[in-house]
Image (cartoon, rainbow, N blue to C red; front, side, top):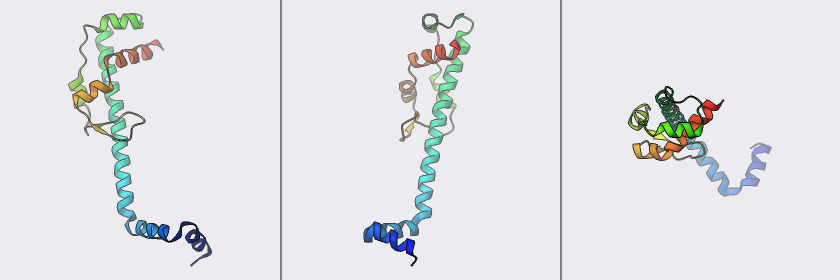
Length: 133
């Protein structure tokens, strides 16, 4: 046993050594599970961004002929006639999991969840912010 191993054993104690030995024996499965979870979270975040962009693009396409200045009041006035394509947005993603930034638990991408994550006001405010630049 090297000096470094002796120092580590002194710090983590007997219980820590058992946990470390268990990890070394099962590290492939543990790291695989962590990697799979990370990929699911990344995919869920990308799905969130993809749906957000699709909804904004769809609303922009529908509002462009009617709106001139892209002010909040003008967007709100003309958005009453616009239909938001919730079902098309859900079908745009490959893996039906969604999570927004800061959440680490993906949820099933149902129509109800998409409506909760992207309320009409959120989309309209995003349209105003994008077109104000």
